[in-house]
Image (cartoon, rainbow, N blue to C red; front, top):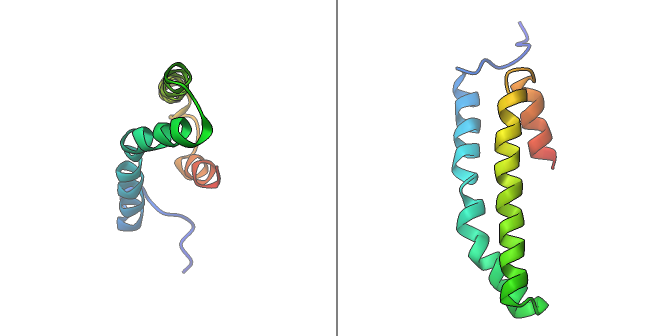
Length: 86
């Protein structure tokens, strides 16, 4: 019998979710490297680098706040596909 989908409790789903949760903090860990590249190679000054950092963190926070409203209404598979394709 062909399985129609994975349950959230399926080990394969748990492995995928674990990978997502491990990769999410990389945004914060790699930000100094990214901002350093902007300053060193793109000629950004400290003010511009601070603005880029602030806007990225603002976008991250806005996405988290908005997710509160849609996370129960959207299929977790569809949301995962959208994130994986972006």
